[in-house]
Image (cartoon, rainbow, N blue to C red):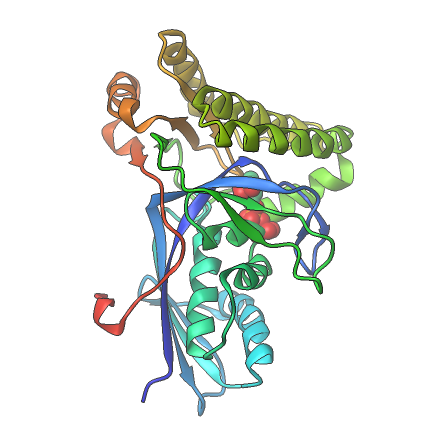
Length: 332
Ligand code: DP6
């Protein structure tokens, strides 16, 4: 019998950003963060135990990956081998339905799906909350992709207490959606890992960022509970801009913006001035994500089509948490 695990995980976009680690080996963040899981972008991953193999193999979108990429996930899979007390090597097959490295958080869905597939392949009984502490050690933002809707990643106390994990906050089933304006889907120049480290170490604004992110988190949780979309949007936009401001304070300064990102931001401000609630957030890349209401998304898209091409505008609803797939669902 084949010992395999198959899992789908959706990506998430942070509304309150994670930007900085207090422990780089354990991926403990400086501040707690909060995200929205999206249904339009996801990763499907299959992990098969290969007890007689000498090394792990990793296929991404059907292409065998080189040593560097394979080593990165092999180290991560060691966490599961250790937990299961099973030293078997594995074959990983992963399909990314996310434009890779374009600031669309492909590492979030990738490590979340890999976590779920490893759990099932190694037959581990782990709650979703505990599994999120494993995903965290692949990529911080992956912690939040274990759940659907609005998700908080509690910064926690330390690793051993398993307190730095994700928790679902709200199903986001009340007219919430996201529109992505793809400005540049090429590989990003500076990874978030390097960018955040540089910011923590050199930006004079960093302590203020951490303080204000904690306040934003409390405020957005209240707004979510009250289903106050405008308030959620205002806090989201302000928090994202503060993160980018903190980066500009780094030495040397960091900016992920491109001219089209600025144009997109201005267009969203104009649309908002016409009375349609919509708010910008951006991550470690030039693409612009617009938090809006599903009931307005087509209207917003139509206005943006005057300035952007149809394939630059990707709409998404709210995504669900990780799901184990059956072999019969594996259509690749
Ligand atoms: C700007 O999770 O990619 O998207 O933990 O080093 O893998 P590592 O970083 P990553 O950083 C995400 C940064 C962000 C904000 C966020 O998703 O919270």
